[in-house]
Image (cartoon, rainbow, N blue to C red; front, side, top):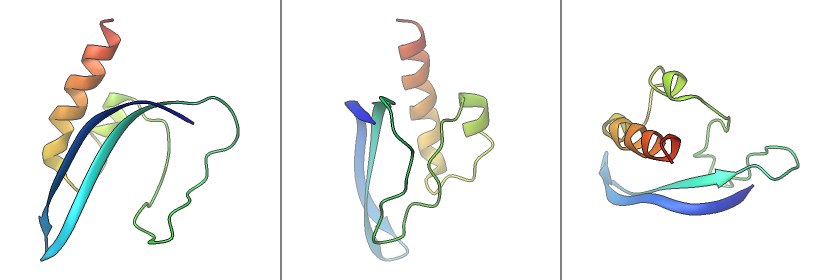
Amino acid sequence: MEVVNKIYEKEGITYGVPVYVHYYFVKQIGGNMKIQDPDELIHEIAWKGIHEVEQLCLAFPEDYELLCQYIDKEASM
């Protein structure tokens, strides 16, 4: 995958644990998708349409609207 740009970044505290969330717009350029996460915080990687994303149980559901806005913006270009 190739990172095209960073969409959004935030930090906060969840259940008393500091969290840092980064969203990226990426492009598949070849190879296989593989989770490389020594902390085991990533549960799945997949290409999802926006209607599939709204069915997911997001760790940060408040970010769904942000993702929709970005996808709509990219689709209109």
